[in-house]
Length: 297
Image (cartoon, rainbow, N blue to C red):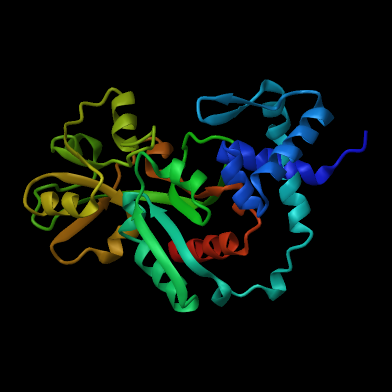
């Protein structure tokens, strides 16, 4: 039987869309055409490939095995036809979603959005905080990129590209009685820590301190850096924040480094760009990556 490699793209699209009607829209063909294509694939692989579960199509075990390597193969083929020299950021138009974890929302979001809208006048940017539904948004939205910390539990459809490391400092009000960054003294004060909703490793600093069996008092957990700074300004709270926030602190605050007694993993955390695998070779992915690397460096 002649193998039609063009049909393989339908497997990926059906695994993402779960319905033949939405898959047909993406392929710009009719729903009956998708049904014919799927029937040919089933004959080629001698497997049903997708079975109906209520209103959705779910891949069979054989289909899941095929899909493990198929997106990368198709991306490599697509890359042969990409001419980066002819692409220009000004060509980008329509709606683009950019999602940031709280530390990055307060540091790189505004300059990145500003750069994008300056260079692509026909773009509308949806910019919002990382949350429980972010990974779902990245999977479902066609033009969606997220920026957060690693490690992050994702599935095989999500591409992760490391951007560099975030580093942490301890921030406090200017008149705070803290005299040194020694671990024993810092633990005398209550902490306000950052949460990243939807991140299984959120409040990482707190977890590291507790893993070391240190007696830390966490009074507040918040996903809003502004709330943290307001609390720190008006109390003896200590906040653990990204070093990239330091440049925006004014004379109301001062900061010290994390205690040197803490392990290296407490001082640094990798940052990454997240997007769907279909955007792997999109020139906009590379453009966003380069801009963020430049901003955090």
